[in-house]
Image (cartoon, rainbow, N blue to C red; front, side, top):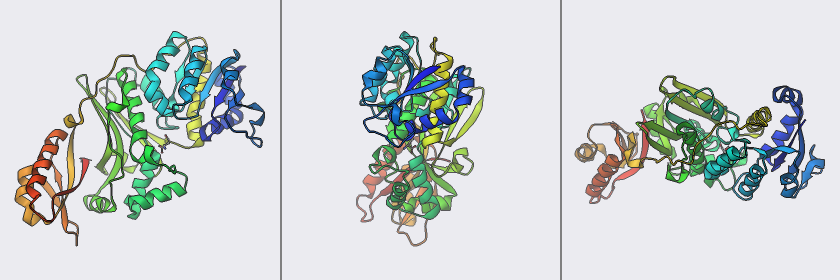
Length: 413
Ligand code: HSE
């Protein structure tokens, strides 16, 4: 029998306890022996829960118990998750985590310690919840040169954008609904500002390149400036807007970003809606493969954690090579990334046609009935070129009372 401990009895931690109990026989068969949950570390008491007699409040109990071989971290955040996980690895215990903030910020160090101590640090649940994506990257796709990863990696923002798209809701109302349904936190910043997606694409990029990726190097823009008017245009164009985490690898150079992107029905991610996640991985031999499913939630995420517990149990005396090295992967400046751009401009196209053409070259033009504005879709150009063109256009426009550019959304059309 292998003894395990869970740190953090929140949504995911309680899901892990539930699966360890309900799927006890399946897990024992795969792991080669029974996995027994010995301790659950939490600040709170849970007198009516099935783990009431396992609750402890002192981390040292786990750290100093040599019988605990696998520790599950489902606390979230960095403090005290980081010092606790580090201490467990240093004590020669395997660690499984669902914590993307921890993996993105300290993964390099924790992977190194795991290797030195001949144990495993596993984090399948940190990206895409229950969707298998980390393991496919280091197992099934190990012979591929990964060229691109593009994902809808955040269920909360995908739910909000889907509501705006289908029901014409404003961002504020869609967010409120997501909060009422428990899909969005009371403080939604990490999701709506793109920080959660940023950490997830940083982890996937590090997996793909085998090098450390600093998530702070990734250009990150959330969905707070997307409006119902944008979706009115999107409908006219036969498109939608999704929050993408993308990294592209070419000739040793990596561009990566988090931003809302306009896509049409031909894009496989178009139909990834509501709280679901979808991840497209393009390999040089494979072509494109897509992973789809529940990117969050108690049992889907706990399911991925339990698979990692089994992997640790199968490799109790050996270190599984996965992850990335200490070598840093540089990320190209966002100005080097190429897109088409959907741009909304105040006034009428009739009056501004010459200036628009002069600034952006050949464009497609769209107008909504009754609006004192129009929109254009540019040809593909580098972000640096677009910014220069947009600045030149706005400078010319300053003399006009209905001044300038109102919105820009990158487009993959
Ligand atoms: N808030 C996150 C999401 C949870 O909506 O995807 C899973 O990381």
